[in-house]
Length: 242
Image (cartoon, rainbow, N blue to C red; front, side, top):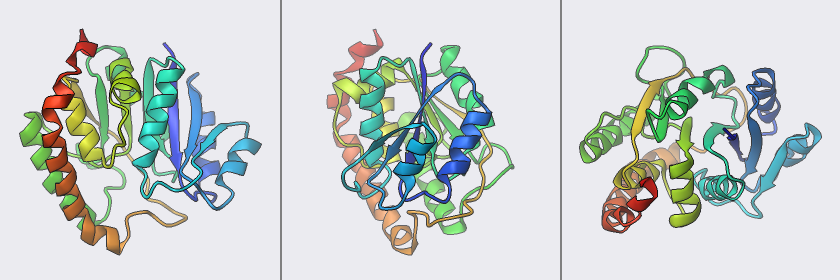
């Protein structure tokens, strides 16, 4: 099985060394690629010095969701069987990777979400952020008819069906993790959550600032409604599960 860990990063020069060393020190034989979202600092050059392949966007896509299309297309083009997203801010923990990979390897899931909220361990995100997460997790749970607790988690794993769906059959820009989750669910994927631990960011600035906190519910609802409008089109792609 070919397994790829896609590290997404934007201006993470203070965190990327620790992130990559964590992956190297917990080497399970997985390939690693960094998807650099148009960084203006030394993120890309640090990756090259560490002999880690880095794919850099020529401009920043506006948010981290812009990296999804890149890593899905890269994984599909290079025939990977399993793909994981791993954030470059050193909040994700490499030793937790097998928790999200094993359900895919055992064919229990097509799409695995590492949830911060299933166990009372590790960093949970900030108070106002958690309010939005809880609201949209509840709405997505109702729509998909399965329990979702951490709809914004960036610690995720996908099997080859999901890779092919977003890397070949449905190569449109994904604007939000809510959209990604709902479209995968509408296409028939088996979605599972597992408990994971995360760290609090120590260096750099999160994309989730005061402005994003205010706009998050608005954009989240737009992405949810937009995904519902795409439901019938995405159902036509169910043949990839056959």
